[in-house]
Image 1 (cartoon, rainbow, N blue to C red):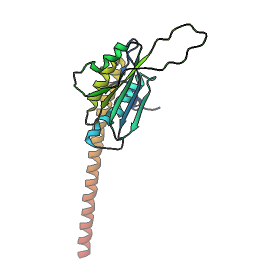
Image 2: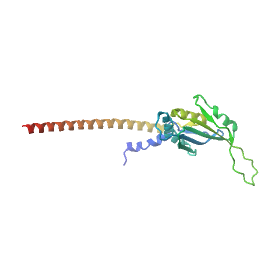
Image 3: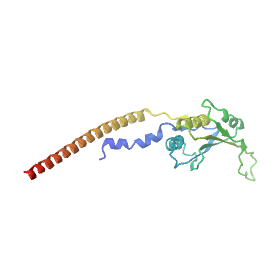
Amino acid sequence: MVNLAKRMRNFQPLLAVQYGKGAAVLPPPPSPQLTRLTMRFPRTEWSLSNQGPRMFAKDSLPRLKYHNPALPIRVEDTQSSTLELTFESADKASLEKLQKRDDSDNLEDEWTEIQTKPQEPADQGSTSTSVPIFTRNGILGLKGKHSREIWRWLEHKTACKDVSITPQDEILRRKLQGIARKSAADRMLVKAGMDALRKQQAELKKAREAAERLTSEA
């Protein structure tokens, strides 16, 4: 049987994707609906200015996808660094307000003009009139921005709600932290023991070599 500590450690990846920055639920209609998220950045570049986008893609996007599985998320490897959000709504005025929704961070972003989304042709026998759907894109430049700034911008523009950790998962998280601390302490003890053993073996080797030299000189 697998020991308890190992079984509990198997929960770590699940907890990591369930909670934290990016773990949020997008609002339902009539709020503008986020229908596509496209992130572009040089994925093979390790400069400091690219660290924020890299961490956002690694940590926040998986959590957002976990809680919103129907949301199409695309990450592209390009030289430009941008995060593009596509919104749709039957309420044109709600899309107009997106650009000014919570500008407290003063992040410079760009917004496309509102367009009417092409509709599927109605059945010939149908007499109902389709409601027009409007669409608009918001684009944030990512170069040099911290992952927290990127998330706050997305959070404000989408009006998503953070997912709070449940009491049961909080208990499990604390237990895992305790196991991690104990494991780290155990590793330090093992390392100290191995270092002492290596030192003792080195001293014994020197002593034997010294004894052999004395024997040969006698």
